Length: 126
Image (cartoon, rainbow, N blue to C red):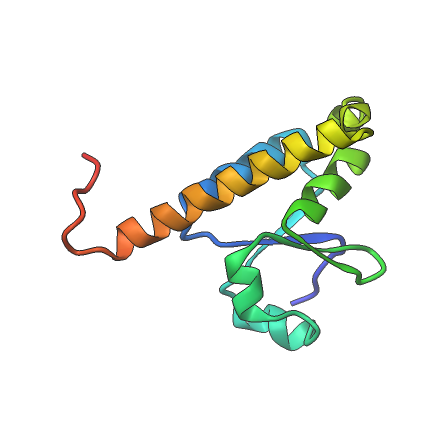
């Protein structure tokens, strides 16, 4: 399979990751998304680490630079047409702190969601 760069690796088994993917696809239909669980991606791009890609969102840019976590958000803020108009909000320390805090909270929710799905005693949503 040929992969078109830039591409975003996401975990299709994570509900928050799926929402992130859906939202980005809505903003830019040209973005390429690949499951971080797909073995072939690591054969094609051996510089990627499977476990790291499953733990945080990763982006491989056009020049094969690997971005992860908040770096992906920064890159998308600059490159997505609809979102880039708001990039000025991150141009100061306070904006960066807000973005980092937001990303940290999303990560915590993602981890809790993964733990809940692995927990046999946890109540399931109906």
